[in-house]
Image (cartoon, rainbow, N blue to C red; front, side):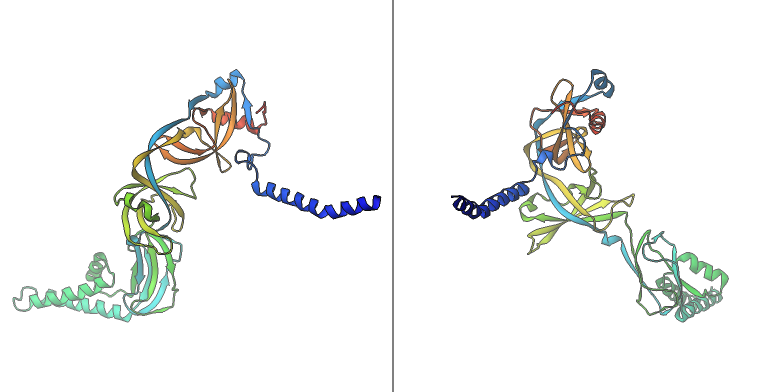
Length: 373
């Protein structure tokens, strides 16, 4: 009899192990409930304050309400350089680089000296200009010769200007009547050196690339607008941009272009937003999300913007659950509307949220002042 029982147990054992493994796998896949996922270590779910603490913290509350808000279109994209403020500096005459004063990554000012080139052609153009200037002065007042002499001088001056010489340097050349030995290469704008592929001693030909510069004061946010939202994307409308690198902040720009070609792979159209970057905080290549008014209205749950707090990368609110008891609640936020923020998940209409005094509640929870959930 014992032998038969042992055989039954050994036969059933693989099935029991399989059932237990499946249950463990299902539990692992399900994961923790949303409100308890990745809890703050040691922090309670709610806290009760003394009357004195409530008064000292100046705790104020408001009720979460559903209201009509303007419908908006959102699209993801990336920041790019403003091509209209991008410059590729090339050699305007053959020669040899005597000095290179800027390298990749340098911030430069408009007119700043970047490099100097020794060029026999440049020396020849200066000599030609000085000869033309001397001839024009000598023939001044000669009715027959003055006009042609001035025309030759103007042509010689124009050739120097095409090499990048400013008027001030040409006037100095006039005053000294001595050619300058090196041709200066100067920054045409204030910005950043994106590329520099030359070093001192390099021989350069006409058109050799020397520096690539970009002015970062304005950037383009290139958004990928889906076909369904194309009718709501109007050139000239204001766009609110959220940058992944700066959570909680908003940047505003203007939609300057809606493309004419639908990408065959993604079924999206390019939307170009020009955004100011006065502090240089925005960088080309950053991911962005843009939203703009699409007309029409929709109903959504909103709370005052100051009631939403950041807690280690998660958005939380404090919900009043008793006379002096407040519960921490993890929420998912949506769009912002003039001092209010949309709550997509984690809160119900009619619940009371804290708008002032959240700092004290966060401090108490960090101290572990747990009274009860």
